[in-house]
Length: 283
Ligand SMILES: Nc1ncnc2c1ncn2[C@@H]1O[C@H](COP(=O)(O)OP(=O)(O)OP(=O)(O)O)[C@@H](O)[C@H]1O
Image (cartoon, rainbow, N blue to C red):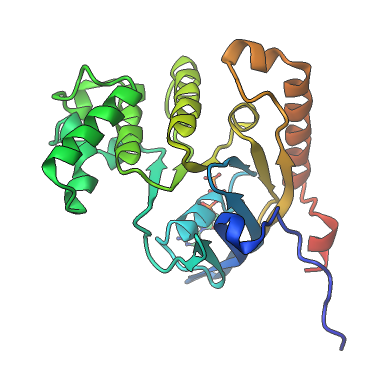
């Protein structure tokens, strides 16, 4: 039999020396008592240093699975993740993750300041530098006035700001965010979206942001990577050609914003209906 030469459906790739983060041929199969579950079939894409990309896909399409493999919290079954050309085999030092469940990611017995400081302490960063990084991070997320509070004394949106401050203070090269705003109200969510764009610009960090929310993906991203339904491949890797300066009122009112959200919405609906890109149907 002839080998299958059909090109795998793939996201955008870069020459090796230009990629900050590379996902190559990633497949993940979970072994369960009920049999194998092929969560992710074949994912390939690169992120350039300083890029902000959003990842959307139907529920169960493997977004969290992908993020956990990128973060080195889980090994892919096939394929690999490279950070600056080095294979990820465990949680890399220069990567930070912000999860949806801020309530579980912050230590309730530690004050805001101590929560933000903890990863730096664990890394052995000297006290004076720790203090400076924590002050800067709390300032950047608008929490400089509550360093001595406990997380449970703060609103949900503020708690998520603490989690973001902790990631920021850590000075990661890559920031992974898994549905970070899913549990906050709409107004807070809009504020946090703007916060992420501000922090991203200020730090020049590479961001991969997973969200269910199509509008959010278009508003935030320079690029939106759309996943198919499971077993997952990349359905489309879309450039978001909106002006770099974004604000909640004007950007969302642009005709181009409406076109892009319409397009992503259509693709997600297709994915939910089981449509797969042509190359993937033969995979
Ligand atoms: N630990 C696990 N063991 C077995 N199957 C798993 C495990 N984690 C995830 N899965 C399965 O893998 C598939 C992808 O799950 P995953 O949570 O990565 O998707 P998702 O896109 O993040 O979902 P959602 O949008 O609903 O959060 C699903 O079919 C899920 O049931």
